[in-house]
Image (cartoon, rainbow, N blue to C red):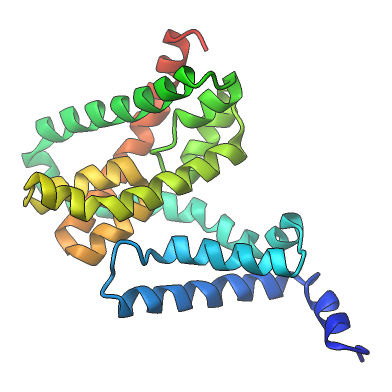
Length: 240
């Protein structure tokens, strides 16, 4: 029996199940808060969850390595989730065939713009090679982006952070930006946010409109492949 609550916490904090439970409970709470806010862009459940978990880790002086021992099951699910991206592609195959040319043009243009803009800003700021390579695949879904960065000599951990920041920023600005630009076509809105902001943006698109969410999922899946092909070419062409 622990002599004090602090001793009990010291014991529990080393058990993997605790941090998996914390992660899931925080996510459910953040998602409910987002729902109560009417899915306001600033009440993004991913952003809220990150902030709450970070505060908990700081207050309890828990190293990230210990936290990850428990939360790694969620990380493992990124792989199957990435493979499952084939589902919206298959379901929307008829629509894709009808709009194949504009989708292909938008995919290449969007993927190339995302890579070049990020790397260009990084070069202007004088960032080192590892950081520039980590920036290149930031608009692809996390498992793919991390794999690309590692293969090109970048830092996968930094890429993961950049992917999350990109997704959160995209989810926050997409609705007011599209409304401000007067874009009402939910296929176009969804495809744009899925391409630029991967899974987090796709989740936001689904909360706005199911058609937008479907095309966001399509864009996310296709951009994972496009980024894997284009990013190495860009890095090589820039001599990085």
